[in-house]
Image (cartoon, one colour):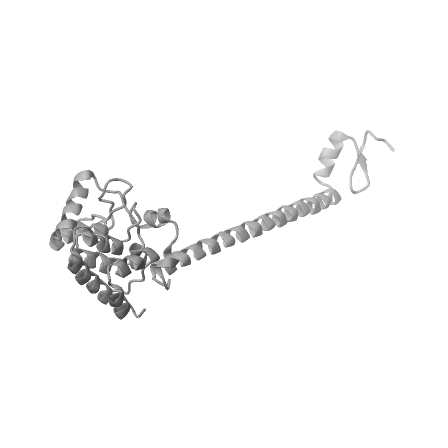
Length: 239
């Protein structure tokens, strides 16, 4: 056997230059390469399909995770929790979800003044102008929103407007669990207010529990009991 020659699939031997010309015409050589190329293509396609299948699986798992996250958020937003204690998740998360810091100092002051003075028409105008409903209008990181201030000063028209709007958007219960830096929910801002008399607190709290289903956390329940408002709470909340 001449090892300087190249064997074709037709069992003939050729030198390098002859083989190049022959292979372009030889049916046996061409057929062998077609099979080889086809096999490589099939292998590439198979690997590609496997990769696509794996990617599809990963994407599906990712989509399922995102769907579950959305369902959890909807569950929270649709007030499906039976108790505010169920909403005792990380306050950083609830603040991130609800509280905004979009306004400049002057705009924050406009919103603050309308809330604490109980100027409902002015407050609505500001909201219609695009002012966020739950803007932080206190010192930074104190987390007092118009809802907290309205409750604290007994401006119930403002508070009810905010709560009705939040109810429509499905964020009512989450907002009622929103705590300030000193752990005051909106209801606690009302009950612990130093700006309201006991009779005012009783009147406003009664209005609140008659109008909305208010599920309170342990801190709020203790304050309700301390303020002698437990009977009113039970009467209207069916506790």
